[in-house]
Amino acid sequence: MQNGRTSKSALGIIFLTIFIDLLGFTIVFPLFPAILEHYLKVDGSSGLLGGIVSLIDSLAHVAGSHSNYRAVLFGGILGSLYGFLQFVMAPVWGALSDKVGRRQVLIYTVAGTALSYLLWFFSGSFILFVIARLIGGGFAGNLSVATAAVADVTSRENRAKGMGIIGVAFGLGFLFGPAIGSVAAFKDLSANNPTLAHLGVNPFSIPALLSLSLSLINLVWIITKFPETLDPAHKSANEAIRIRHPLHELMNSQVGPARRTNWLYFIFTLAFSGMEFSLPFLAAEKFHYGPTDMWKIFTFLGITLIIVQGGIVRRAVPKYGEKSVMLAGFISDLLGFLCIGLSTTTLGLYTGLALLGLGTGLANPAVSALVSLYSKPEEQGRMLGVFRSLGSLARGVGPISACLVYWWVGAEYTYSIAALIVIAPVVMALPLPKPTK
Image (tube, rainbow, N blue to C red; front, side, top):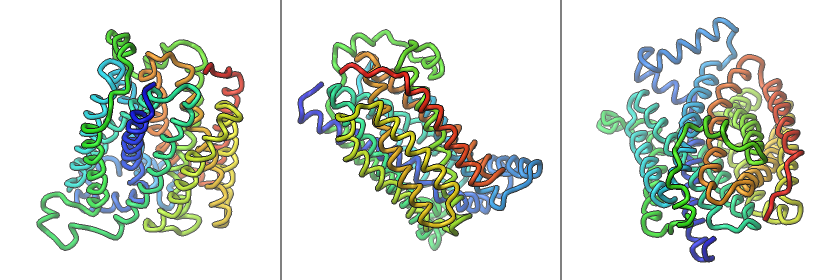
């Protein structure tokens, strides 16, 4: 662990890196129907978009369509694309950072993230938009590097507090991402400017421009201020490590508490990611929220996450331990899923959101701290890479799975199923030992 000044400098940059990654993930949440409508007008029913729409229509013909089935399934597909790329790349970036250092890998990945936003700004066609999202998802796999850097600069006793900083960045990403996306429903740079439209500027270029600006600030900050956090002794010990496929890393990792914690995190994130993608459709169907209203839901959830992860976790973990805090979070999320799915009033909806914010705010930093504490110092990047990769896989599978279930059986069953899924990580967590500090 490094001195306090170095640690604060590193944590500040890690905070911004994770915030930008989550901004890119959440910014499209309110925009799925508008994106589908826009690119259908631009590209028509041919090409990649036409193929996706035809597939969705075929599913609807077989099973019977929900009232907004196109938007629901289209949103699930787009969300899954981003998550799958994060899944593939998280352990690659994590293992590479164990070999060459955190700083160098963060420079590469943040530059790649900026490139994805630049391409999105000029995405006049659907295929360019998809390429931009794929590039963004791949480089956003640097969450594993950022998490490993937190482990580098925090003591074992303060590991959960450090992971709480990551949680605050997640919360801010959930707060500002959908809010910026909602603003895009009002502002269109290309509406009255044919020249910009000809260059590929589109109705969704403003959030891309804001995200690009933040990425460039982050890149300059890393280059000028970020210290290398990887211990040279650990770096030399990892020079022979081969970078393997994330599933290979997971299936061949040592059986023990770290592996079990990774798996229970995957199951929990599967349920949560399905919720976060289907939530806009529930709000529109039950409470008549439009694209410009969605920021209210995600802002409330984001503020709750920030309060919990920025304050409550810091006090709860030293008193009760990571495992107890994690279990309390899982149970709160289970109740939150049930409350949202069965809600018929706005009060019921926001009560469920408060329970979800509390539960996720408690669970996420506790889980990541446990994975780190159960892993050897020289394997922090690799093991946390597997950890973040599993979360990304869940965010790849969760959206499309939840959207399919939601379209098929509706909100009540979808959220009840999510609550049942959370029972599994609760049971899996019970035998976990107390970590050594």
